[in-house]
Image (cartoon, rainbow over all chains, first blue to last red; front, top):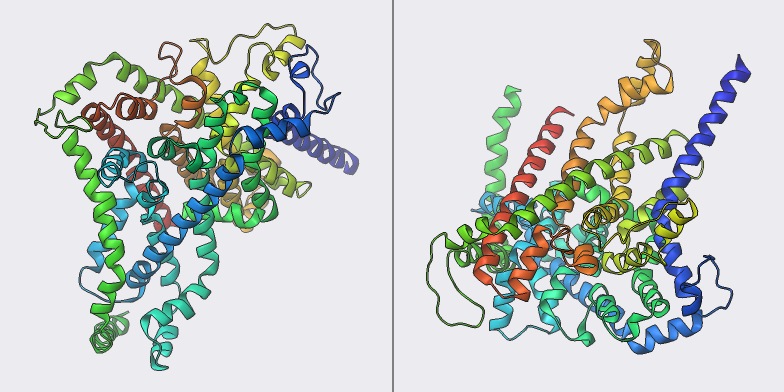
Length: 280
Length: 310
C-alpha cells in the first residue's frame, strides 16, 4: 500500500518535471536559437544539419560587426537615458499629486481622483495622433524630447502611489508636523523612504514598458542616433549589415541582454513589481 | 457602531481645522498642479482632439480643415481592410487568450505542487515577458524561416514538410498568435501563482475531511473554484494585451500577405503615420479606444466585485 502510494508520487513528480521542462523549452528556445546563431559563420547557418554549438566559432566577428555597423551602444545608452528621464519626470509629477490625494484635504480632491481613474482607461496608442501633431507644432519630432515628454504623466503611477501612501498611518504625519516638518519635507523624509518598495515596483513597470516599446519611437523619431533599443534593432535589420543573420542575432542579443540580466539578478523584485502592481 | 458614527463628524471637523491652520488647501493645489496640467495637456486634451480630428478632413501640414460629420466613420466602415483587420484581431485574441490562460494555469499548478526546481521554472517561463518584442520577433522570424528555420527543420526530421509560415495567407496570423502566447503565458503563470498562494490551507483540510483528498479532487473542488476571480482577471488582461498586438506584426509581416495578418493597431499606425490620413486614422482610433475602454471597465467591475467578496 505504502509502496504503491510512493510509486504514484514518484510518477507524479516525473510527470511534473516532464511537462514543465517542455514548456520551459518552449519559453527558452528562441533565446538559445538566438545565441547559437550569433556565434556561427554564414555557411554554418545555412548548412543542412543543425548544431547547437558552432564547429567554426564566429562569435567575435559577428558581435564586432553588430557593434560597428550599427550604433548598438548608443541604442542602449539612449534606452537608459530615455527610460531614466521618463521615470524621473513621472516621479516628480506623481509623488506630490499622490501624496495630496492620499493625505491632504482640499476641495476638488475627489474630482481629481476620478479624473485619474478615467485616465487609467486610456490606452497610450490612442493618443499617438494628437501627441504627434503637438510635437510637430513645437518642432520636437525626431528629438529626445519627443521620446520622453508624452510619458511625463502616469495615471497608473499616481494611482499606485496613492494606494501605498494611504497605508501609512496619519499619526506619523501629524507627529512630523508637530516636529515642525513642512509637507515637502514629509514627502521627502517620510513618505518616500517608507514606500521605497512601491516606488521600485513602479520603476520596474515603467522602465520595462519604455525599454521594450516600439510603437511610439517608431512614430516619434527617424534618426538612428537617438533610437531606443526596440527601434534600433529594427533599423539594424533593415540596414545592409543586418542582412547577415549572424550579426543580426548578435545585435538582438545585445538589445535584449541588459533587461534580462537585470531580471535574473533581481527576479523577485521584477516578478512582484510587474505582477503584483497590475493586480493592485 | 453608533459611538463610532458620533465620533466621525467631530474627527473630521478637527482634521478640517488642522487643514486650514497648516494651509493645506493651497499646498495641496501646489502639489497637484503639475499633474493636473499634464493630465489635461497630455491625456484629456488629446482624447478630445482625436474625437475632433475624426470629424474633420484635416491632413497633417495643412492649415485648413472642414467638419465633415461622420464621413470618416462611413469610409472606415465601408473599407474592407478595416473589417479584415477587425476580424483578424478578434481571431488573434480568440487564439491567444485561451492559449495563454490555459498554458499559464497548467504551468502555475505544476510549479506550485512541489518545490523541486521551482525557482528555475519560474524564471525560465518569465523570461519572454521581459524580453524586447521587436528583437525577439526578428529571432522568431528566423525560427519560422522556410528553409533554415528551426520549426521546419524539426518538422523535416519528422518527415513533415513545413510551409513558409509568415508568407502564407493561411498561417501568418497563426504564427503571430503563437508568438503572442510565447510572450504572455509566463505572465499569466505568475498571476496564477499569486492566486494559488491566496487559497487558504483550511479549505484543503476541510475537503480532505469530506473525502476529497486525491490530487484531482482537490483541484476540482478547491483550487479551480478558488481561482475563479484570478482567472477572469487574467483573461481580461490577456485580451487587452492581445488587442494591442503591434510589434510582431510590424516587424514580421506588416499585415501581409494580402492583409492576412492585418490587425487594428497596425492599421491605425499605417493609415495615420505612413499615409498621414489623420482624419481616417482618428476615426480608427476612436473605434480602438471604445474597444479598450469597454474591456478595461469590465476588468474594473470584476476587480471591484472581488474586493467586496474576499
